[in-house]
Image (cartoon, rainbow, N blue to C red; front, side):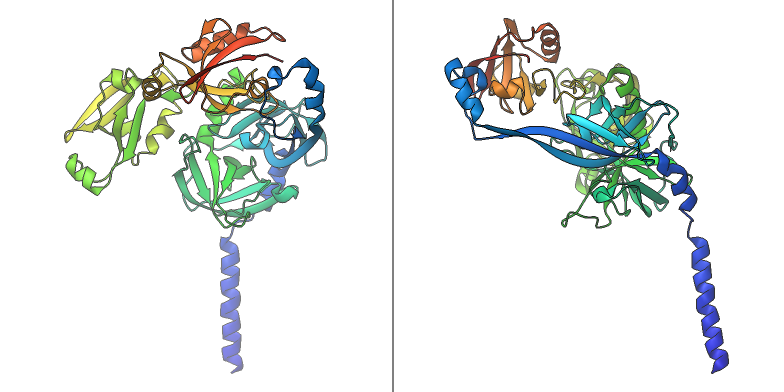
Length: 453
């Protein structure tokens, strides 16, 4: 009996030692990189008020004081997130949803030094933001090579979940190239899925591989409880590197545009279209005179390769196109009527691409706007116009009573046909002077005035 007990103990002990030997040691990685991870506190200022239906610029001067008395005191809402230093002169990467509407941003290092941060640029479509603090000789992280990551790899997240500074959690890569469309139906990020414990406050923090290189930026969680359930998503470095470069150079991101509406290919469609298996992105509709239309692509074509990259699912195509610069010529491999063809496509610039200034809550009027597509123009029977995508509170646009969905057609004495007109007019708008604004709402033409504060 003693002999059997000893043998059993030895077997269990040997298994434990073997298992321990196979698990990685994360201590060196965490000690080496924690100094470059920062805690971010974002402050939004708002005033509570009773519901008002009259824009400020339409209230008679004699009554303005009465209406202003109804405004409550300003309140500051604080939110927390994470970020990491990418260059020793103070550039910091985080999520757009952490700082996108903040009026004040503070950054704290792990040695407890604190700095006010400047927003260099925001990119809502990738959920990335670039900040800058006034300091030098800072510790930095290093990015992994794009597309190096494999499913099953160990990864480590460092951040401030629930405000608990510099917490580390580990897991593996569960999948890569996950497609998660935004509320606006846009899909430019092939997310990394992991089972790392990610919670509120981890947003914007780095995801490391075992070499201590950043492979992703923690961005989203799927949860019903508000906490981690082993399903988290990170923005890959392939997207982050391109976004950082453009934000540094011009403060915004321009993306490639193909001008197509796509859908997945199922088994029956594959058979009917002459494909050996379900694959690729089926072109369901093309924008007239868009890049794809000009290249000779047609509805019913199936794109199976684009710019030398395989298109396995429909969602792969916008991930590829979004990282290609406008005016760049690339090759597309398509299946048309059962035959493979190669077509040269010149990538276009996406209409209505975000041109919002950094840290202003939209443009100088407090708006996010975009071009109307052909279908919307046809339905509205307008020759052109700019559609309102977002109205920021406490802005000139909010005071003018603008709403999401309004179509702007005139600003000052000038007609608005597209985003080029809008950008040009904004540069000439005088501050402190009311200008005429004409827009359509549910088919009705409305005139208001708007003033740049």
